[in-house]
Length: 371
Image 1: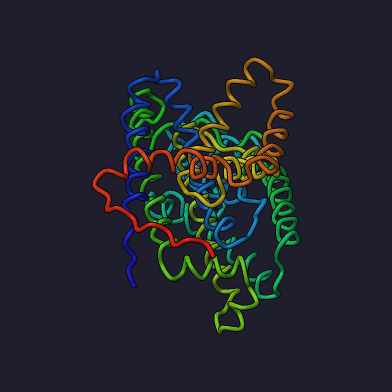
Image 2: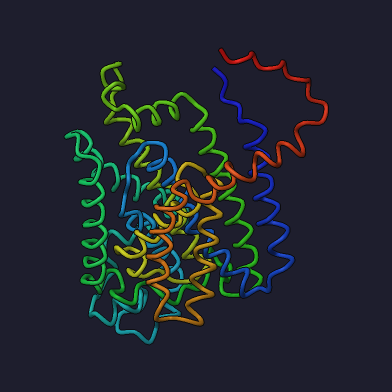
């Protein structure tokens, strides 16, 4: 069994890499490039949804929870690094984050202590969302809860998590989140040069994640996921543990969302519960739907397109943007359900093949006459 990627897939990744690493840095000013870097952090979630929703048929409306968990794990490390006794000597209790001092905490909570280590924080960025997803998925998939019921439960989870974070203000920063993040292991992340470097790190990680997901799609695991989506009972009767495969892909998508959340924290400089609730989770599904829930590259382009439109239109028509976002989702479902990738495969790819792929091709045999 071969796990090699098709040349067409590699070419698509190469073109995306050229766009992100060469074209956009040359044509965009630093402010706009930093915004594109923020958009790319959402693309980690969209790519994970392609595997989870597009390939395995598991629609999750709570991916913002895992995005936020990854972001908070990174923000906790950055906040502790900025909360040295010297930097917080004016507080009642020096050496703890400012929002804890405002809420009259006198010591660092025990679950914050491990985040003083950068290595632990990097592992936690992926591990904490994955473990959280494992608990939820094990409880539901082992009982064969799926379809619309699973989507509703994940949506409720997003609402509960955002309320919980806001309510525990002394431990999480409350509605304001964790702000005033300054350095990463002594490196000032607030400068333009740092944001420029983080953009390239972000783009490189995204390209690596896409290649990994393409590897999964081309493997036997990827074919089993598609078979589960189309004929779940037949896969179960063939001897496969369907619940275990669903748990794996859901946890994998959660880990990818956590990476996106961590990169968002580094790129933007804060993390708040506004990225954990129902609205951002549904927006992340829309990114995937617009790009094409069956295409990894389409999900990235869909994320860039929707966020660019959101930024552009909200600056001119802030009251109408949410209606436009809802209308866009309805149009995608009704007019081109396979998203931008579907339009490309239907109208663009055949013409490119006719222009580029016919030279040197062997003549095909004439079709047999119809009876």
